[in-house]
Image (cartoon, rainbow, N blue to C red; front, top):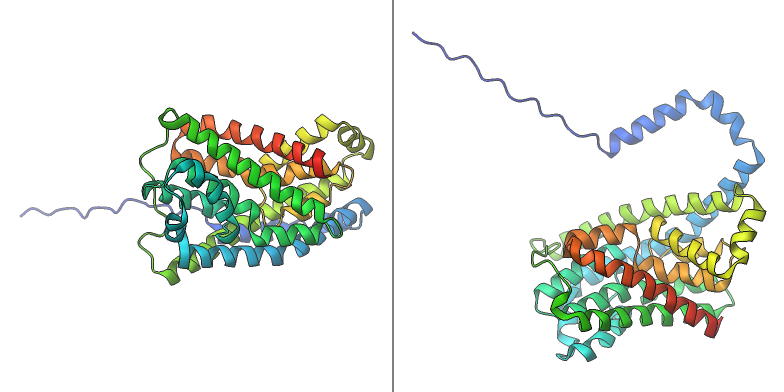
Length: 328
């Protein structure tokens, strides 16, 4: 009589999730509270926390409105409406797609899969990528938040709108001129294709808010740190040099990767920099940042991203500098 030994189930280790991370952070704060409390009374830290909280409180309502509006558009209208109104001629379709970004807003994170879906449906890549660049930068939530962050400066709001639209259209025409030489992956994922409208709305709100709010907090922390801890003479030296100030805020926009519905409040906090440098920050951020570059590489392919990312960065900087010189 033979007996078979019971097979052992393989050990499956569950990855550490958000709950565990939050619990560890809270535990660390409680354990180190004896040393942290005296540090909180330091004047510099008090200044940092005041600036940080002010930026987050000002930004959050616009972030929430922008995320909800983006989810409504994604769930109810999505790319189907855009595909109907775009002209068949791609050269004309590029500026139309840029203007459509006003009526079909979306967060940067939502715009990437929508652009991929448009290409899959037969829309010219130049048109889809123009929408990708325009929608996060010229939608109503961004325009209103910029006006609130820069009160009494309607020319700043107009400059951001024109520079962002110009960036989207110029890059779109560049993509059109490249044609088949621009390698775009044929395997494009369709976000929410198997979801109902309600499920897609809830998932879009959850994903975009959690993703964008995390970057908002990081951006607010860094902006407050620059204004508090970086010596004033260093900031004045960088900000006082036109080219260096522009390149510094362009790099900051790329690295920090703020959501476009809230980045104006961070830009307004850089009081030492020129309005043109701030405009560069606001035009570069929604057009290209580190998270967008990663998403575009994953969606459209790494060879595509190698060509697309530098072109967008240079076009955004030059457009913002040109419009800033003209209007600001």
